[in-house]
Length: 235
Image (cartoon, rainbow, N blue to C red; front, side, top):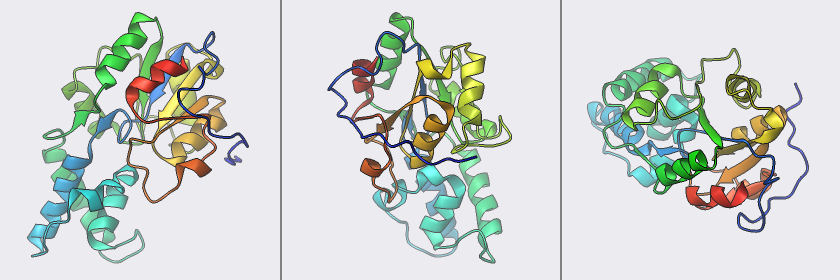
């Protein structure tokens, strides 16, 4: 499948709503978009460093790798890639550490609960589509108290292919019985924007998220936001 981004400029968040009459659902990435999960991910990475007599890394150094999951955190903490000899062992150790304390310091981003409440008040469905596997995403959604409010939660192992393929977004649209063309997808990684375009959804880049080392202005998202509340200006 060709995942080339469509050629459309990024627009300012507050300029105009995106197809306001037809937006029926807003779907969110989880890490770095719906919730700030970096503190617990970083704590797990630093626990591994501590066992090896290494000093902890500051959250600011680890934060931008969170969107890449365990692979990103092992790289950030040890500089190892998947084909390196010790990578698999460290990845599994990281996951075990993270699973033991998955929602100690993680929180929804400021304004997110108010935003989804306003979406509900406007009869606009909302849900979560993440590359985080279900055994990690489900406890977080429960801890945030939105398990019964989200119209859907699609995890990284729900479909055969995860983002940047469109499969999880299309599955979410099917679950909530809304045409993909009537959905917005909000994310903080280029894979989110690629997946949205491939699924025929409008894309929104969350500039308050983790972003990694990439440049969101090159993603060709349909819009950008600097806070969750700005989503309300797009629907």
